[in-house]
Length: 333
Image (tube, rainbow, N blue to C red; front, side, top):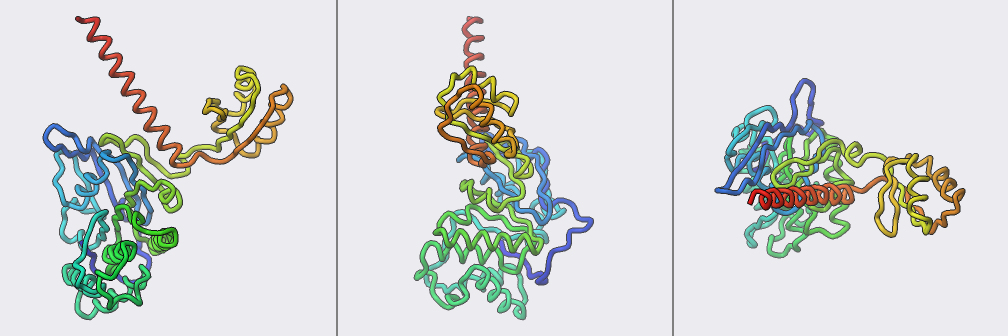
């Protein structure tokens, strides 16, 4: 799916609705509910991270949004039009997680083929191809055959296809999965440039550190449902302080309680919601009661920590619910 050519300028968003909007979007395969009532909005010009464990429904959601599968229930709109609208598809770029180009084709051949499929005029094609090659760092390899490319270079070429013609909305499925650290930095720079020119980016990735570096907003999906979503800063919440101390647990918890929510993560004691400017005061309070301090780490909770904590709570909740159901069933018997 390649986009039509648009002018080389920031995409205007005044008076326009969300780039992506879903309402109760669902997909069932037989007895399996792959996506269960997905409701969300992605604003135009935003970089949106879509996260979840394997089997959470991420790929199913992307297929539905791109019109590659039909929903069982619910509705969705891309760029103001119902999903599957042909005219809108021409304004959308897509990098799938798995793709392969014929080894005998050159990079320009691949881009030329997709430019033809996108309906780019012969006048605009050479410039669009040059622009895509330059954007992904393959300007000097355009005449080389795909079969000579490393896996990382093929990933760059796939990204170039997704960006061909400067689309308004781009879906990137694991765009850095085959890249080395330098390549990942290049992709982050490309995503930054896309944001600057007003392009909406929907990033599907399991590399949480990458998502944390580039995304404005995120949604975490599990078992086909969104379990958390919002601006990245709001989702991660306030600062977190981790303290290693050999003081008596009850005393330490009592001293730390006024500073935030206290929990244990042995060998650390964790205080969530403590402003960083109160860390010296927190340390002084522990010292005042004679609690030995062996280490202090202050900062915001990482996306990975929040992700694991959130899914861990859901798994524990599901296990408790199953246990309760089992107990009720035993009593009934």
